[in-house]
Length: 458
Image (cartoon, rainbow, N blue to C red; front, top):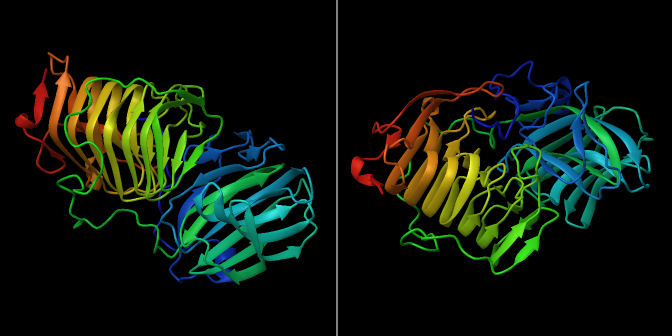
């Protein structure tokens, strides 16, 4: 059964009407054709589809998501896509405790990383403040004294339209201004030295940044990007010896290039399949991670929040997933390897194409899986070239009803004399809340592309 790892929480709704809140309409959305693209009321009792960074988060019996660690400096839950641009995000928020007058419980929009976002904060001082947050630099766009207290519910909403950012509390605008910090990004629920509850999250959008499925005429790729750096010959013959070890206590954010010098990084999560684990590395759009050995426990491995490149990255013991590709359109894995993945190695939640080449996979469920029950049903593609496979159930799983494709070349399968390894497994993708069903496997020239000469058995 496919492990539920999702970008969103509810099926995309394209109709206007009940899905658009009265408050959002009254405030004037950026388009008369706003549609609800994301909702979560947590009544299913879990936080799948959200990415945690710090804090202690649980869903209680009444369907409220609570962050209970009031000593946490930065506790955040993120959802959605980094490509979202103009939208309105709304949530009910209930402060439970404030550690100081500057402590906060709030809502975030256009988050491009765990520390860069627009934030509507309810402060311990009793004020509500709309902020542009860039690490430790916080710019107040506007604020209002509302006598904010603990134990009461407040409806917060942030609207983004171009460079205009507006904040509302209980339907009343408390701040509006122009700011160029971020043009697109995910939504978030946040606390800082405070505890609180969250419920009824809704995102409405004019549609510019939230496609459901790319047009059917989008041409699938045929070859890996010609300019990808890194090894271009045979996959590594064995597993590297670490140059040293470093325990990691919190997710390492990466922008630009991070070169680990083949040091082993370990220490996040419990080493199991729990969906609440933080990633070891979180890559911003355009980032490159190279020469890294990820040991155990590894949490949720690597999160790519936009286009990313992984060069010579090794997973000694995959925990939840080795890497999850989320908000971009082009992701490249070049060199390295992964082993001991009870489910899948690479999870593709965003749109576009994943390129995997010069790679080793051992003792895994699947090397690649296109998400079959995410809220946003993208058409996804994978190109797999020059890969060695051992003790792995399937190389790729795709959703043919959404137009996914998988292309294979120079695949070497070791130790499978009975040829039980599935090359390309076809599923019927379904809405969030259901499980995709297997509908077939094998080359067909439509969704699964390979010939007998592309597969070598040793």
